Length: 150
Image (cartoon, rainbow, N blue to C red; front, side, top):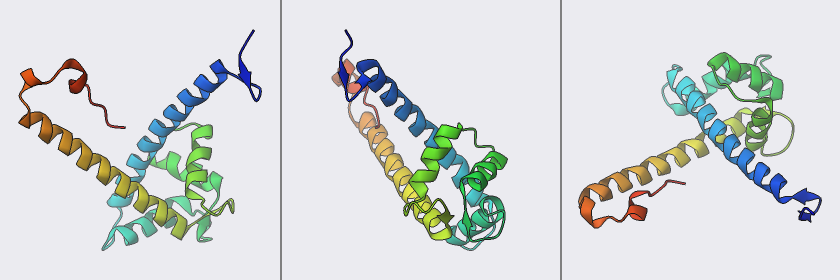
């Protein structure tokens, strides 16, 4: 007999958790590509570069917003390789008002949040590397050596 809660077995819950982890990895990779593409645009600052990226690659019909198909095609043209399911997750994470469109402001907000998140991760990684140089190797136990970020 399978254990179920609300119609989901333990195997279903494990699968869903694994898929969420895969989605997060794919989204991180997608944001890396997006960030590189934004930074390659000409502009005085990140906001102008993000505007140029949004207008050139995501807003194909010049409507000041993009739908899920425009996002999918724009990111594919940049070399982002994610599944349709992961694209839905990315789209929903940017479309804060659930309008089924990503407005320029929503894209900017999501881009800035991702930049801040990446900045915090890099600071954390740097602190771990710095701390590992300060503590002699022989003082670290096996479990302390395998510190993972996130």
